[in-house]
Image 1 (tube, rainbow, N blue to C red):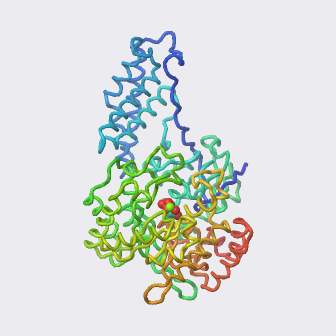
Image 2 (cartoon, rainbow, N blue to C red; image 1 turned 180 degrees about the vertical axis):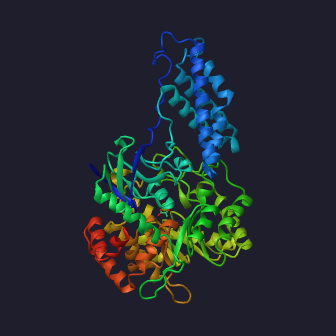
Length: 572
Ligand code: PEP
Ligand code: MG
């Protein structure tokens, strides 16, 4: 038995065999540096390429037949690419000794041919350019097949397993089958990484930043505790019993009534973070009282060009339709850093997290924001949802004022800002004097307050929203909103839509710091509601004071968790 420690990012206690995510395929050496086997002929190498392409296609087809929804479509599209005779033909040409630069090995020929096809698709733009990722995926699969290595991507399996990886990218997620993967464990990635966000969205227990878990042998049985942040190999009786007990608890935690109140009857609406209309339907089914964050860039992540106004109206309308009469907070495009959009951001920036991203792209690509606001207003007119609109990455009061003017010009009545840059939190009173509400993006607020990239596992302890500096910035924001009162003398509303809202213990602290709504992945709603209903506002304020007084993130977390035994009872 060996225990690996990391950061627990989604609760749950489960057992299962490990399957490792294959490491990304390395570029094969170029002509002149890689030896071509002495007995190899152009024909024999060409046959190897043809066989490998056929094997990849057959494998993808078999998986597509068993998959459903978006995963099935991705697999079918990739299988079609693998069958493309163009790719195989141009690879075979590169095997010939008369090729400029000399003959390539079979692996190198496939690599270069795939690269050329990808370049030409990219140059065509539009729909064709969106196929670039599929071609590169097929190329990696054929090269793996030629090398006798496991195919890249989520491993296929007939039995449920625990997926281990260094980290997961957004592109890996389309083929992740939540009925097969029972937990995620990674050696890298932080609490705000894609792995963490994906795990919460799918309701899978997850531990990130646990060094060594990407080296556990395939098939090893492990116990994962997603609240404690531990992974234990070959678990004994006690841990088996804990996993069984969790299975029972999880079913009682599965439901949220859709009307969240504290123990003293104070209403704290629990909202959902969504990226598409389909997500919104699931969120409404899970009892979400509205949408606290519509990440509009998620509707267009694979796009090379700005979506038309009509397309935008239909994408946003699909979300509004799921919440008639309820609040839906739309965030304008937050492109950049971990969410690049080719039509808005520059991939060559030296430091994208500090670059022209979020609201700042309005300077580099004028007009895109105005057209988006127009589309949001048009979608609002077709539906019953109560639409609020906010800008990401606002840093100054001038930016907030300009955004409010743009919203007004588009006919949108409730403009707001995300507070995720420390400067906005420190000047929240003036920033909020220009807009109607603020939503704290604790994922970015933490990375910028601590100067720690949210994607990096080794910085996970810095990148923790329990850090005293982050809690102080949240408190300052709530105080600023109380100073910047609205026309009827009420404090301006402040919510949290970062991942911090999904941590039930931190949710209590956030309420105590003066936050009025929490928005999270729908799967987290029931757990957060179950804990909030056990505390009064006064108790939340006491716990917030205890957290603020603690000298470190770990001590703040312990101080609060110690006073909330319900967390352990519920396995949260
Ligand atoms: C945040 O930064 O907390 C947030 C909610 O936005 P995103 O995770 O999309 O950057
Ligand atoms: Mg953000």
